[in-house]
Image 1 (cartoon, rainbow, N blue to C red):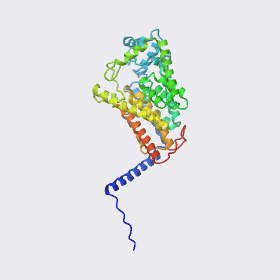
Image 2: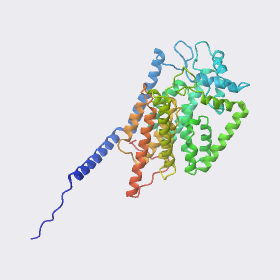
Image 3: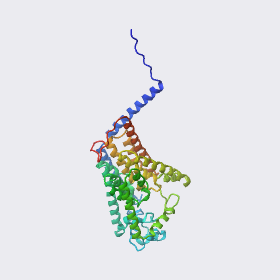
Image 4: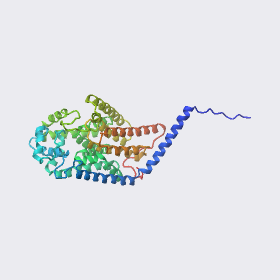
Amino acid sequence: MKAEPRYMPLPATLHHVLAARIGARFGLQRLLTIENAIFTEWRLRFYGRGVAVALVIAVLFSWMRRLGHWVVEPDGRLGNIDFCWMWVSGKFAAMRHPVQIYDRVIYAAAQHVFYRSGECQFMHQYVYPPTYLFFTYPLGLMPYLTAYAVWVGLTFVVYAAAIYAVVPRSATLIAALASAAVLKNIELGHNGFLFAGLIGLSLFWLWHRPWLSGILLGFLTCKPQLWVLFPPVLLVSHNWRALASAAAMSGVLATAATLAFGDGTWPAFFASLVDRTSDLSPQAGIELVLESFYGLAHWAGAAAWLAWPIHLAVALGASVVVTVVWGSRIAYPLKAATLCLGSLLTSPYLLPYDLCILPIAVAFLVHDGLSRGFLAGERVIMMVCFAALYCPSAPVGPIICLVLLLLVLRRIWKICEDAATATPEPAREGPPIASQCL
């Protein structure tokens, strides 16, 4: 009689590990199924419109109840918003000696020249390079309220065009426009739309129209703290035409600014960079809440000798990650998302309206998700980050940037892991095919 085969039972530890992995995989699959049922295009359109309407109501309510500042106060005076100094900078650009814009005394005195008493009191030192005056010069030729409407409207179109170019869907556009950073930028009349749109469009056109992409990157030098990582990634990815175009455009802008506004503007600009308070504010008495790890550490009470090493460690790590990703054979939307997030993490001087770049990064991440399929938990985490931006009591921006960067790296890791076991299906080029689930 033939004996029955005897099987050695699995060790208890290995049995528990396998059971845990199977359970975890089943749980992730269940989470993915739930997300597919929740994150549909019509739901995002519906809730996105609801958030947008709620933002409009909140702005009007705060204006009526004097809970915040906007372009016009309830008593008819102009509000104390950032657009005040931007409009005045346009006036200086048209003067005979534009270099006086970097003189604190003269610049502060302009408040009494162009505004009534009690209006637009947010007149700190001008801190942008002379090239930025090309953007504000036309504003100084218009009445204040007209200039505000034109500035916010046109830069909003640039920002929306960048979002829609990456993911051409109304649901994604509505969700991006309901961001807290969008509300802050409209409230202050600042340049968050402009530079987020320049970054988004330059990355969208980088491979198909590198010369045009480089021109847009040249304009990005008007806000140099966001431009730092672009030259290294263009080098490691061998985007020579874009790099040459960006360098040429930067040189043209710098030369034109020197000729138009005087050669004394550049030394005055560099001198203004070192004259800062501990929170990097250009003027004592104006407390800034920075959306960087330096700002987060300073907000938590850390001294500068501790806040700077914390920020530099994060910035160095982000720079290395971005450079490695761009030097690898990774799907381009993930490279673009990594660069957007890395640019935010490396800059110590980052304000809430600068977080308009976050929806650009998320749009590239969503583009890859629509092409390859989303991982379990991705859309929930993105939604939590979206909601966390409405937290007014703490600078949560750097934490959200780091979480989203880890989300991108998780996707890269999963793609590499799948490639090691099987031949992956290549991602589709161009706009993703329409699908109900987002």
